[in-house]
Length: 188
Image 1 (cartoon, rainbow, N blue to C red):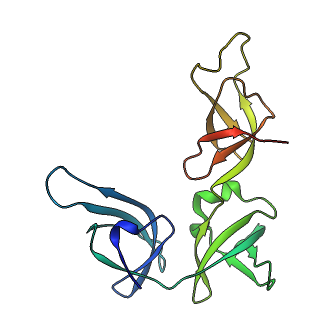
Image 2 (image 1 turned 180 degrees about the vertical axis):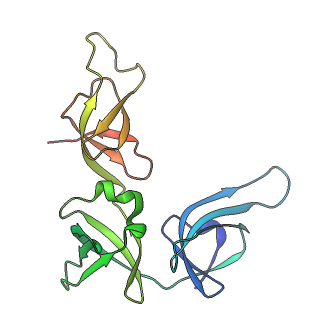
């Protein structure tokens, strides 16, 4: 299926010269003069090689036919990360290269979207927002107003997040999974 380059997003799978690539980042640039372009960083699925491509934003790119379904995370072992499709109970092992940085969020029963091509998992998509717990941060200072700057915090899964001054250790917070930005304090 052909799509225009400017519509490519992280996690899309494109076919180029008979090989499949998963999109890691896609940015559209509109220079003052000249042609708008889409800069895409991709990983070749067959061997994990990273490749950068630049297309005119209106150029047609072949988007691969990929099956995308929700899976539940089960466990990690020497084979990789294991997920189960909740309707068919079909299990799939995903290579650590495919999971990449997403592994810090994988917890028992977490629902993710796996993209598969010919039965092989090629990309993982996390929920946009997830709840994490703050493991360490600077203590709250009395009289400090909420308008002051954010402070660094480290969550129980090891990621660093900038949080408002009133957030303390043990607080559960909601963050964006794409850039680890603080959204809100978790409810409940």
